[in-house]
Each structure stands twice: as C-alpha cells, then as structure tokens.
Amino acid sequence: MSQLHEKIASGALARMGLLDEDAIGAAAALVERVSGSDVETVRVLFADQHGILRGKTLVASALSSIFTSGVAMPSTLLLKDTSHKTVFPVWSDDPDIPGGMTGAGDILLLPDPATYRELPWSSNSAWIFCDPHGKDGATLDFSPRDLLKRAIARLAEHNIALVVGLEVEFQIYAQVAQKLDHGDATMPGQPPQTRNLTQGYQFLTEQLYDLVEPVLDDLRRHCQALGLPVRSMEIEMGPSQFEFTFDPADPLTHADNMIMFRAMVKETCARRGLHATFMCKPNLANAAASGWHLHQSLVDMTTGENLLVPPAAGTITDTASGWIAGLLEHARASCLLTTPTVNGYKRYRPHQLAPDRIQWGRDNRGAMIRALMAPGDPASRIENRVAETTANPYYFYASQILSGLDGLNRNLRAPDPVETPYDGPATQLPESLLSAIQHFENSSFYREVLGDAFVDYLAFIRRAEWDRYHLTISEWEQAEYFGIY
Image (cartoon, rainbow, N blue to C red; front, side):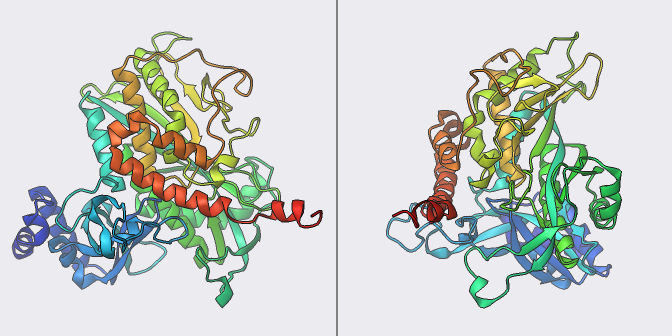
C-alpha cells in the first residue's frame, strides 16, 4: 500500500497539484480494492456538455495509471453537438475555440475515486467518473462538474447549502427494429422503431405497475446496487411513461446520481431488448411529455436549520422569497441550462402539468415553481418544474444556485403566488431553443457569474443544433406546399 501511495504521489497528476494527500490516499485505497476484486475492466468516463458519458475502458490492472498520469481524450469531445459532430472549426486559422483546443489535441481526465461503482448489470465491469482538464492541468471553464463545484462554493461563502431531491420522468418502449442497416448510420443515427409496454393514461394504477414490475424491479435493484437513494417507482401519465423519485442529497452527489441513473436505465433496458428514452416529447402517437422536477431546500451549514420553513401559515421566509425571486428573474436565460434541446420547448403548454410562464404558486403543479412550505415542516421546499430530463445536471443545478443566490444577494422579493398559472400577464417561458439561446447570450448576469468563454461556448454549440433543425425540410412543409404549388 505504501509503494502504491508513493507511486501515485510522484505521478504527473500529483505534480500538477491536482491530487492532494486525501485524494492520493483515496486513489491508492481504490486501486488496492479493485486489485483484490473480480473486476476485469473499468470504464473511465466523463459527462460531456450534454450530460452524455464518454470515455475509454481500461483493464483493471491499468487502473493505477489513471491516478498517476490521468487519461488523455480528444478535446473534440467537448466541441460536439448532439449529433456527435464537431461544430467548432478546429483546423481553421481562427477557430474561435475557448481554451486553445485547436488541432483536435488532447485534454486530460482527472478521476474521482468517490464515483467508482461496480456495475450490477455488467459482471466484472465498473465505472469511474472524471473531470476534464487542460493538458497542463488547468481547469476548463466549461467542465460540467467543476462548474457546479464553483457554484456550490459561492453559496457556501454565505454559510448556506442547497439540498435537492429528484423526480425523473422517462419512457421505456419495446424495440421493434434497431435500425442497424448501413443507411441508418447517419449523424445522429436513425432512432429505433418501437411500441409501447403499457397503453398509458392510467396514472398511478396498480394494474399497470404489476404489468411492468419485472422491468422496474431491475432498475430499482440496480439503483440500490449503485448507491442511488431511490425512493419510489411510479406509473406516470402517458403510454410507457414512468417516474423514479430519489431522497434528498447535495447537488454534486445528485448530479452524479442523475448521470448514473440515465446511463443505467438505457443500458439495462437495451440488454432486455427495450429502448429507454429521456427525450422530452417523443414524436410517437399519444406520447406524453416528460419533465424533471427538482425539489430544493436551503440549509444553514452551521445549525442544519432549513431556511425555507415559514414562521406562520401563508407566509414565506426572506430566504425563500429571495431565492424564488432569483429563480424567476433569471428563468428565461437559465432555460438553455434547464431545457437544452429543440424538443424540450414543446412541453411548455398550458393545462399539461407543465409550466408555460414564469411564476410561482403554493402546491400548484401548473406553476413553474411549486412551493411546499409549512410552519414546523422540516421538509419545507420548493419544486422547480421547468426542466426537461435531458438537461446536463451539473449545468442545471449551477443555474439554480447562481440564480437563487443572486436573489438573496440583492434582497429581491418574490411576487405574489398565483392560483391560476395559465391565466394572466406573467412573462412567458422561451418558445424555442433559439429564443433561449438569445436570452442566455444576452444575459449580463450569466456573463458575469459564468464568464464570457462559457456563455459563448455553450451558445455556439446549441446554435449549431438549432441551425440543423430549422434548415431541415419538415414533414409539415412537405404536406403544406408540395401539392399546391
């Protein structure tokens, strides 16, 4: 053990200052643990700008090398849109790429021993998550985990911690055809053909749960084996639509958990011949939109007191008021971080248990922010219902921390709560990804707290996706114009 500790301590990562003594000890202990286990391969991964896991698989005997030298990855992995196409001109004279990522050179992955998990659905295999850095060890402005860590640290300067709880909706379908013909290997690849597991629109019915219990049992057991604090498994509203909820945790832990959950669900289902999707609103007959409801409470780091517990019925604390006001003020600009796809904006429709405008209400599932706060209730919290389940959780949580903290710092006051969230003159949420990009780009707030490099970087990638979308000839155009002209 001492030799292993010394080997890691003298490695390139430690020399760069990326591993302190505690990290070196944790790395050495993990390598020793894996060497005495049945694990044969370790998937060394990082969550990219879209929250998609990318990486390499190493044999277990090579694990120590990732803590001495790190793992090199092509920098273009951070420069791709959701079609997996590199959208920055990496070989041009003026590539306009932040961080000097010209020439498709390498970045360096820094592994986090705390994220190591052995995979219950893949015998003898494990995961470990990493943070991308520059080749010289420098932190990247747009590294998702590091961006969230910086936001958490800002909040901690005020002696406040955010606690989050997850409600995640998604769909699972039976695969009819995988679309593996040569002509289907496009960018992105052609989606599979599917059919429902359940007919749907039988919300929370026992009969449907029993029908799909074998699938949901697999997912629940795998959550538990990964250490994810799963609380409930539910039949959601639409056909083949389900919801898993999770007990509260700190933002970084639950961001990692969300990445693990999405990957586990997709990989487990694929091995069963099923297709799981977290796409917001699939283009399938009668399909319902899926949302991601994020419960949030604020805790005094010294006393553990929940700062959202109101002193009397019908009131809210100054902290709750400021936090809600900050979330509302920056909601439009935040949508690029909470609702990052073209498809997600098709969920913002009235009377669909989803918000379409920026406001809050008390225990109101039509409002963007649903307040669940009562005197004496230690679980007092708010629920932001704005996000889609494709969102990068590190970016999403950072947007909540930074927006809410801005409301606290400026002593903002929340407006009156609403009872009829689909009526009245409240500001609308962005109607499209393009609108969200423009709000984000023009946000002096986000340029201040996240930096110009990050804002321009993410807007560039999302605009590339928007351009591909609106320049594609749609079925609507073909039906509308092909016959009459």
